[in-house]
Image 1 (cartoon, one colour):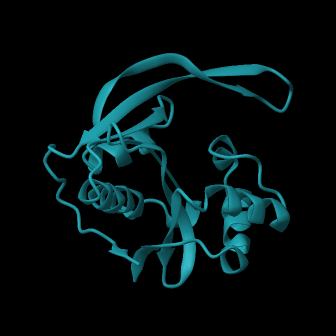
Image 2 (cartoon, helix red, strand yellow):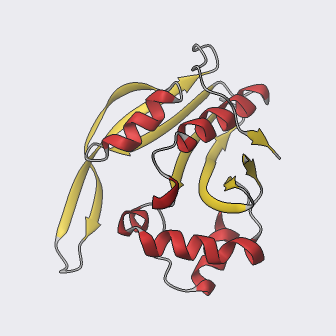
Image 3 (cartoon, rainbow, N blue to C red):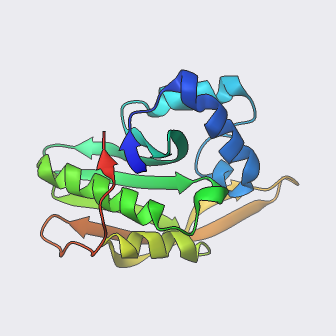
Length: 174
């Protein structure tokens, strides 16, 4: 069974650590997580904004709605999945489920950005009903292991409460 649920730091820290250990790419999504203490700190930081993507009682990913602005009805969405959980449509279903719940709470516009060199992330957003709005050239800067700067373009996408719902089966929302 797949669902969205609140994070439980004591139960989920090991799963977060394992996900980050299995994917170098996740370190671009969050601070590096190399220890259980860092996983606990990460979960404490995201507690107010994020839900765990849970499959059969194991946290395999995260869906977050940050920078919520109630006046304008906007929020910034993000998501990640452990490598072993990818390719099954979970991220798109989680993003759609969380988007529907935010719209039901009165939000109108949800935004996100995906690196242009990460077509899988762009595809997740589009499957979840998000529409491309443009490209922010060289928006992100990362320093590689040799101290060299890498710059990445970001594709901006958004979904409005008035947009058509995608044909996805929502996850259970605990």
